[in-house]
Image: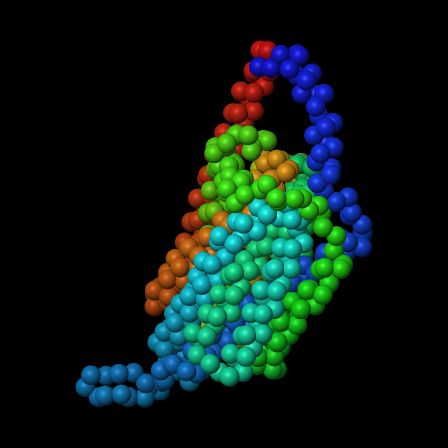
Length: 488
């Protein structure tokens, strides 16, 4: 316990700390700046989601046209015989070949993801830590440059109808730029820069996630009609154009929330200590303990393992029987789901925060995630997919709330590092989940196409159990601290 003299000394030093901190942050936070941030975020996500949907459907279409998925089956006594049965969606390939194409498409999408995210892991770590010194805006620019060039290259590949292996070139380039993580990291860190560690930060980060949802929902419908009317090349050119527009806006229209500081005496070793110190040293943790912070990160890891691959597999899942959706129906379903889960759920979370703690709200979001995954996995009709969207209404809010939960535990001067760590976890989850779940999806098509969603539900359940244990540990820590204070 500290003595009265020590306590007074600490209090006397507080103004100096506050003054030092204020010199590190830009005070600009005008309504115009906020509006520009909203516009840029929505444009960026429209490009990201629209490009992803186009890529997923293009890969499946290319495989159908360029692989040996004919309507013949091999019979040892009769040679190659044309089968009269078509696939359940009414195509001119057999039901067996539909499953093979689904499996092959999921594996190609996995390879592309491994290429991009594998390269991005170390880049995001450094980008996040350096942003505490160089500012948040450079991260946004890096991401936009990466994706603008990626879709220019993809457009050329589609135009020339080159083999899918050529896609590794643009994905490698984007990996060097950190993928989309630096952009999201910059937006989340900007909220942390401008808010104190309380419910305002939680709600602010949730709003950023909602803006991401608005962008996704806007892309869903438009991309479906764009593909149906113009094929795959022109949507990719349009996506490259969107990222180019973002590149024109960011340097001149957005104020940085973090003032640039000299990195003259900051070595790579210092950045590495800053990145990993919060996992081992109590000096980095303001609230709770190192143990509870690590448990929160494990919860986030399990949560994102299930969430990161759902959109990619969801497109393939909806294209196959018994749903047999086309690009426009996939787009409208994605639009409705995103509006419900990103926009409406924000108001639900705000209402829950009035009477419940942040930890309890996170518990509800994890329960919603479990319900949505299980119903999707058991779906046999389109109606059940719609019901799953309603059941999972709070599912997308689990990620920003957990991110804010961890942000509130760490010192304000290390927000770039802590949020960088969460995005590295996302990146690693993208690598692992796409490997695991794509393999599960490919191998379970013959007996239960939705089995992979039940496995995702199990991951959500595991994260829920660990988070409940975390809340119990924090409650015990707070009780112990209160007892020590009373005794002193």
